[in-house]
Length: 170
Image 1: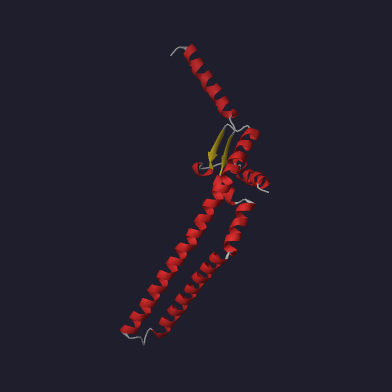
Image 2: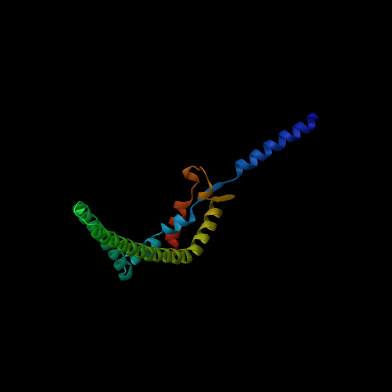
């Protein structure tokens, strides 16, 4: 390779390193930011204090208590139980487990529905706030936090996004 070509290759490498050094890169966790906003927390509190969710949670807790009591009862009588009685206890425990799983699925469905509503409500404001942060910070590359293995805290805009969204939703 001629010395001119080598010089051009070295110069190109140096220039590309300078270009990379000038890029401003940041990371962000949009979902965490959305669910950390005051309004999202308020919606979660409203759901948890609502009659339907509270009654489901109480039912779940009661079933759990019934299962523990039944388990304790079985342990206390384990040596004296007939096969028929042991089978009855096992059947009761299976019914309680099935009831608990059903209530658990209902609770999870309520939470998932609320999460979807919060995302639909706040996603446009989040996108608007992200655009503002990118413009203000002259950021040339913004990455989702999940896609990044390592980043220094000063490169993470999630906290700034939460603050900006809180101001927009008041």
